[in-house]
Image: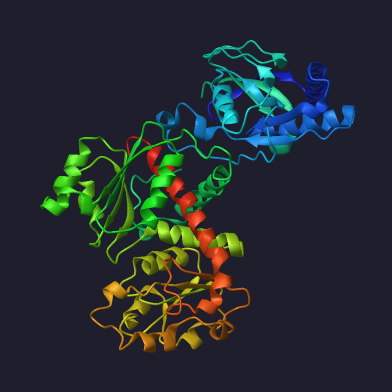
Length: 184
Length: 308
């Protein structure tokens, strides 16, 4: 990220792996009937996390949980404020979410605005029995009454800092890093 | 990064603009397959469809596109407006401006009239056809359909047949396909396809059989019988004889070539009705793609940077 430099590494590749196994177990513990589950990954990194969790659930339970991709751009509350027109990425949910326990997966929970947009979008796809939220990192500073059901790691941060989740699939390595403003 | 306030002409767009529109359109196609075919992206925005010329397809397509993005839509057509009572176009626009529209989709009979509109409104202007000049969204949807079918827009041989002289669709398509290094041929009676067209880098033919040789895409234009009173060709029968696309003729084109028509088709004039079966899927496809492309254009105009 421009103008920022790495400050602390808070999760290593091993940590991320362990955390994802725990999250998968927690999801299954709360919904033992894995046939009821449907995973929805939020673009971009939430999708990769969702794929990994899907693989772990398959390993544990042997079930192929349906997985969808959600891009929330069109549901943002700041579409015209931020301009220029933000990129719209693919949304792909090719199964019915009606009466499913939908597990929404994202990398970082911050203001909660992304999740608000995602909830609105989900409701346009159908009526799930329940929606749960899973995040790899919760860094605080919520601006809406939203909380995650399962959190990989709570990371206290300063509001001026950034939390970056890097994943093998697009960043060539697995890690979670806190960034601070560089003085340059 | 999107840096256009208005979408007036394909001529003024760069390749990256066209690619950005297509990327969005692909995602908007998915939206139209959902149970609830609507997103709040342009909530609170006002889109005015200002049609000084009759059009059902283009207008309804823009209207539905705006509604799927949750914009408020105002349809304004010349026949029901104060224009028929003698109001000038400029006064009409000034009046509309008091509603603070965000986007004006305009169709006008005169070429290059969009520039005049810009002076009297802060809204983004989208050209839905201006005289014989351009019809950018039609060309975008044609190109989008070709890219879907062929997997590319590059190095194709594209043939446009019919009344090229009066066709804004032809002009927009020529400028568009040229940006992707595709070569364009035009074909029709010399009165409707002036030889001067070679100056903008297209090959001009008056023999359809020769023009069809090895082409990947054929765009058939509608013979606008309502505009043919000044007899640009001796008789309709002669036109059909020489320029109608028939199952026999099509064999000269590349195998699996794509045939398109902006509609509505005069069967057995531009195209033999024996080709109905073959064309039907593409034509319905084009309509769906038109909706997606127009949603993309409205989205970009509606979420543009304010300072543009």
